[in-house]
Image (cartoon, rainbow, N blue to C red; front, side, top):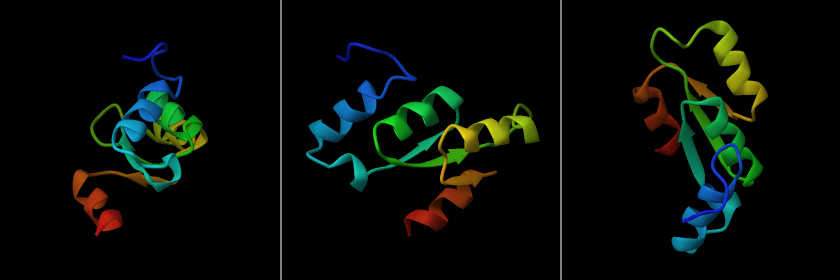
Length: 83
């Protein structure tokens, strides 16, 4: 449905358009660097979920550098920013 995969913003722009939302009105929860990058390029706010064994300090730093506004270590923390 989109021309380019993540880290291009196409999938997020398509999703926003199909919901008739402006990108800046969207919040994306992502757990990959390519996903955070894509959502950031789309102009959306991004919460990175860095949970599990793969989520080292180095990985968390990459998520931040990719554009995550928030960095969460559990899914329960995500609910705090959307309430």
